[in-house]
Image (tube, rainbow, N blue to C red; front, side):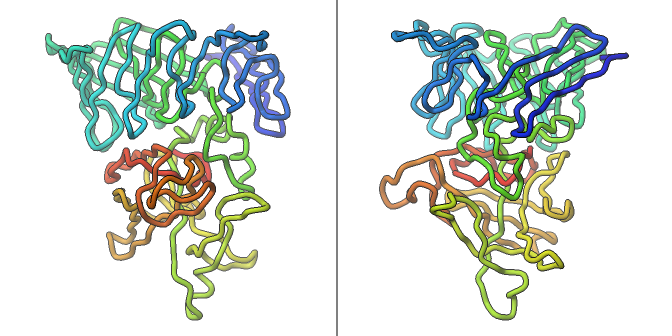
Length: 390
């Protein structure tokens, strides 16, 4: 990109329809979008999952991208055996076909160890403050160190002597400009694994295409009217890729119990649902000249939990099967995060009805991850995506 100009063309509905570059040959992109925010001329299924880059032919049709019942990418081409298998928490645990692997994780979603399908270790990963900083190749024991930018993108990988083994520049939506490539690193844009067989980045809940500048499937959480940029369910981080990262991180409202003496800081507000069936909840906030503004806790550009309304505060969070507990002021204050469960149908006592606000209990249907180092991630939960964050 040196000497070049990267110009994205984004329409009024948040679709990235054009990328022009005045000096370099890549990346470029030019396409129209439909009224459903799908790429015009591409094939999608009824759930909004992209099946291929050409129009849908008459049936029977063998799509290039194949999804499972939970809209997760299962394999490429319908004739192939499943390439990607997921556990009950939605984490990808097996990859077959190219680079057969088992993924072993700890309390966080990031991979700690990779092995062959028979269980022979091939790599260990080391983290500091929630960030991947090193890899140990097995069985030889060669060490690689990761040097990442503010988004968590591994721009440089070195050996134990500091010799650069892998170096790349990245365009805003994840396109890679390789400078040096003598390492097997697959964790690239914002630290997510890039599948060599498809070129897609695995973001946990969905796959993202850096070539298209958008996700392959619609966000099951949707968005909300207070922040129109979240309403396009395919857009990558509100089309603000220079400061925001992975939108599978969830933002939370803070629950409160109403009483007359806190009427200015605890009010009932819509936090999801539809116009016909709005979902209301009592949430914390502040009252100013423009009325009541609900507090929303989420990640800033550095992955810290803050009050996204003001950009201030230092929150920590603990996740259990009963929900998320958010704390501030060194643990002096705390509140329960509010969830919006949109992805499951009622089954048994612990599941709430479709589009129902859930305040506690086991929350199936969506995998969320906070990158904050004090967050116990990988809980199975539904969440209300207030805005895109880490």
